[in-house]
Image 1: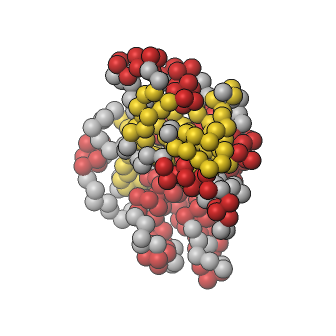
Image 2 (image 1 turned 135 degrees about the vertical axis):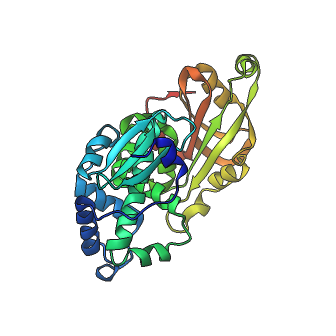
Image 3 (image 1 turned 90 degrees about the vertical axis):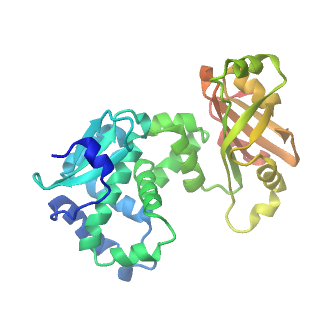
Length: 329
């Protein structure tokens, strides 16, 4: 068996001998998702759904990764090489099975890391045994292999329908959803962008207040505003062409700083980070942006750490979707 260090440095993969459980799943894919038998080609999410059904994957999946890999006859190893890749895999000729190596310090990202690698293994197997797989990959060539693997991992760890139901039950709160699905809040932020379907636009941003610096922490308490970096933002549009009904959401998305830029967090946002607690407010002004109509905004900081915050907004009439144990400002 080669060392973890050798595996991490080797990106050349050998073709495996067909493995029965993976072969059985590929056989199911061949029959159930063949494009000829469907009105549309399968999506990555369709494949993830079939995967969940075939192996009866529970939610959350994180505590069951070893059981899942064992059922697939895939070995899962954790290692402490912090200089290596988060995850990699190799086919071991002696044991005639795939082996996945995941860094032991990836924390709550472990589930997504392992599921991405499972998709890469599955794709190699399917390329040889599923007649439509190569054409399917070619048709989606605009998406990289890494992106396909990520979409698969998200759809298995955060099943779209289950996730959307949980999101609506918990006020779209990424912190609560992360605990529910045993993953990262950032993963839930992405899933809200991809899976949530509302009748009105939905805006969200992830802010970094960057206080490893003691000076920044001090400013939070003595200044009227403090700078935060926008890690990412997104606007989920409503179905059809109804967005013109909510110009306030368009104005917010356009005026909010782009990812990587700085934002002056004042007023309600500053109050939330100071108090280390979530707040809900209806306003026509946010972060210096004047809006033509009121919006409902939730500010959700990461408690006493005071280093991150999710900002989420909907039109005033849809305020109820954000209500989740919030203190109104």
